[in-house]
Length: 381
Image (cartoon, rainbow, N blue to C red; front, side, top):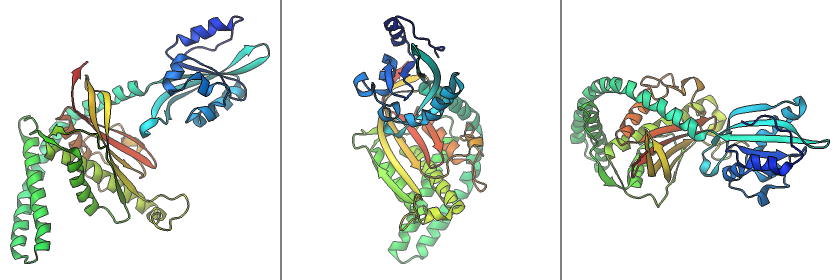
């Protein structure tokens, strides 16, 4: 970032220099009114000078309240202060990650103000995390294949028991439950066959992603506690996509179940949260999982740039992913729950990767979001 700035007698030359920087730069007076922002800052915020100049930065720029402690420290200490990897709210509910620096500067005469420099490192951080996720995937795939052998064996017995039970049931409504068991056992057997096979490509079909999500929704709704709200927020513009339905259903189920289990653990830790649906205490939130679809554009995954990508999101308001496992959460046997198997997320990542996609996540207490990115077209970078 730029070093401490002392405005020269020819301020226009200095401002021209600031306008040429790729770092976003703001000049503020002592009351935090914006007196200048360069072209990079306008691009970052999507705001014109007429919308910002003369206004307090906290009034003009959404999320600028998080910078108030930096401003105060810079004014008190007289030295530059830096905040690394600051989460900045952006459109669409996904935070940008910024490096921010604040320095007290002389604006001419006895006047002084603050120089705010912002560098958007969201893409750099995303690429770093993506490379780490892909490295994890290569190391975990062998273990997943070994575990698949152990999982497949009891499925035959489960299916056979369900068939015997179905013959004894006279009520058609009860037989519907055994059909679900048989259907899911068959689906899991096919899934394991694919995972155990010699790298066979997915059996892709043209499908409506929302139809797959509706199936996932029904299964999750049946498994979740009645006080867990499951909401759907679908983008009707999402086109038909070619995927292996069994693979993607399983990946989505794993993410949904992971969220429900996190919500349940949060509910046990804080019983007051469970009452936050009807007559809840002020400030308490009901446990909620949102299934969301969006179309993302110009997304890079594993060395390829994709013009259109299906973004399938699972967002919950649970306690969040524990900080000590965030870097290894997609490894097999890594779980934030004492009773967790640690298999679901690793398997989901493996299945999505077979479609050229990737699962990413962002987590904080009260908001955790896992996103499946599935390419709909590909252009090599």
